[in-house]
Image (cartoon, rainbow, N blue to C red; front, side, top):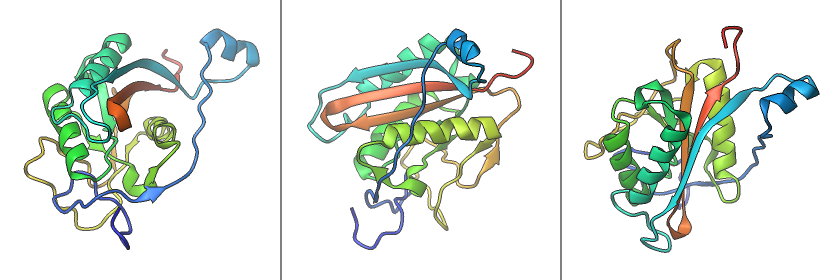
Length: 203
């Protein structure tokens, strides 16, 4: 963490590390049948998920994201969608040199045309609930039809990274119903979930 830094700068040329934050996010997971019995309308759906451990290092990510690639592929398989169906990715995006580079490699290999956002530039890196907070934000953005932009001025993209981050908020295409949120954790644990926005009358 850089003392005095107001926000982390994921995927930026001048990124210099994480900014810590804290908070909580809660999502209740239940079947459609149970939701109907309770008389509630689901806010969204868990379409697919994947988890894989690369065991590369106690704290550093594997440079080519082997574990993350496995997690993303499994999430896509379970959701039965192709990468082009994703509206956006809410990346782990810590703003550290190694994490952003490994994540960007995975996105460039598997999801090259999918817009990338990273909401830690708003929340900081929560120590206990980063994945939950980002999953909630991802679903809210899907339902509101907006991809969140970066929370810092004068972004400078890192030309060495094979991603095109979303620097300003933008609308989601009408036919995009899914988004991916991923997390990389100590010990080489990698997780990816694909969320689908709330039901419409057409579903």
